[in-house]
Length: 360
Image 1 (cartoon, rainbow, N blue to C red):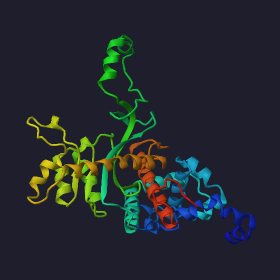
Image 2 (image 1 turned 180 degrees about the horizontal axis):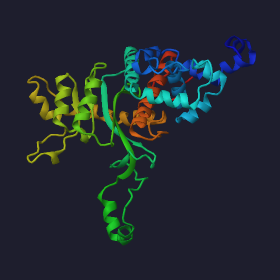
Image 3 (image 1 turned 135 degrees about the vertical axis):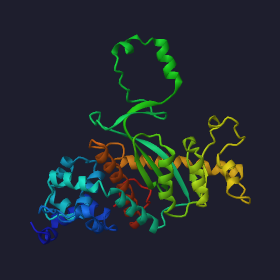
């Protein structure tokens, strides 16, 4: 059936006005033609032809992410519907092998796609002047040999780290178990991590895929530099994990004030301060004065990062349908891309860009 026939069919027209207008609405204000500029999507030197255009494939994948379809098989099955695949730009439905090959190729440039979408939300003035940084866990299939067990102090402990010794587990007394449970309130999970900087109405503006939720200073500094290149933040908020000297200095040198609780356990002669910036600001300015009330009130805004990460998890961040570090990383960034696309689509339709679903 041709596109013209579809459009002239009254029954189909009614369908276009209902649920199946989602692909058109999602991608109405974003353009992915730049994908064809990447070498990875250039004509194959061995003569293999690409049956479907990369922009159409990306739209199809992101649409399916919005429907909680993540694996190549699930995506291909979802796109068998002619109305859907045509709205995504296909001439025919893609096979799961076409989807699989595309996702492999996309993995090398998916961070650039994310960066393009961040620029799109920035161009629409959707970013505020308060940036927030935090890490989150990315659970993996237990068959993923590249993932690992990681400790998350904020987790509820739904996973249990395996013990190679069954006897050791059986010999553990109830008293010892009580002592272990009192030691912390966290738990173990099997998977990876993602460091995210957020701003505005639940928008990720920079991210890094990591081996675990807990991050190191080098990664934190790299992601922060990426975020500071977008927008004009006045504040950068992080929890006590970001009590890092170099990270604070990077922010201050950029003209952004970082607020992270001071961890006196990191010093032999601790300062009488609540936030690390109270000490570091003196190394960068003789005139800037920070008021405790202002720091406290601004730091209360940090909790927004958890809502943003929650919105990204609604887009698939928490549930990769693939295994292997490269594929899971690609899945994570596609989830972040979907969150930005939803914000852009809602904004362009006059709706709240902070909504985590598309309002038609």
